[in-house]
Image (cartoon, rainbow, N blue to C red; front, side, top):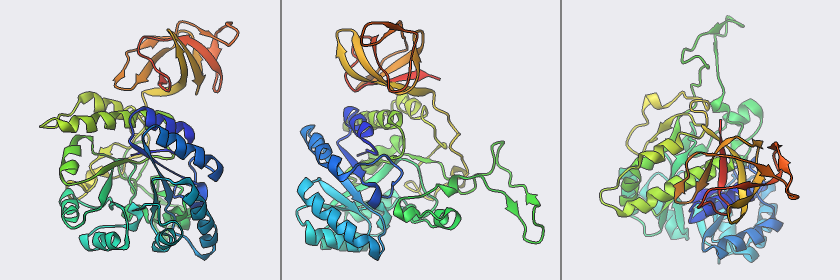
Length: 394
């Protein structure tokens, strides 16, 4: 399952092999700063996903206050007409509203609900949940014990940002910036660089040594379970989830592609890691990688990394909108010039470096450079397909 923070990310996720996407509206989603969808665009989006033979899950995973309940009720009534494959919730009250107002829609329980034991899992199953998105604080052995206790589907995160708090139930952003993480407005305060000051010596900062970029004492590395998918599969996990509705199209495309290939490789015994997968994942800005708590206690060394740990090797340059012979129509997502070295990310393979020979406009006029949102025409190598992204070496 891949993140779909916008229509472009949704298309990228489906193109590169996701079986399902999760998306939401800003008002009721824990990723309010993602591009998200309106109720008007949601209907066509869900229809498009279903026509691809894939599934669409809608998030209503905020922790609501009384004032939120009436608009959420109206939203649920609208969703009953749109028929998503499931709605992802954290709050018991919203769960009850869905069961009452739209009983035909399956309900998944978000990781925000902090399901950490088999008794909680059994209770949600008895209440009618269709899937449990397990807490990120579980070991694989604990997941296996929950699997043995319930018959409904289990899902867990396998890649993306981790939170210093229990599965994201954090109030640091509310305290420091008056923006509630539990209402979808997290400022990522744990990613900031901090200094220490003693109360009786105001203005005198104590050093907190870490590296030359500062002290990121609350920021864990990013989750990456690509090397251990077989263990999660054998423990009975039904759905592998990628974090990142606020990440870019480049991230969604590349990470989805890698995990699609890895999941396909689970049929081989033993499961073999392709070195190219790790190389690809390292190309996206990250804080370094960790296996979190899946293999035991979160290692102390897997904290205190900032998001500039591994700058991206490639930046997205454009998206292929159509291919006619060896000529592609491209929507640019940045500047692109003749002579630039690029890579076309094609499903199932990544083509080697390719030099842009010429760009032309709709009238066939040669361009020295194209800019963001321009439509240009370029010659492409064999195998490039519609919806492939183009990356420019940086």
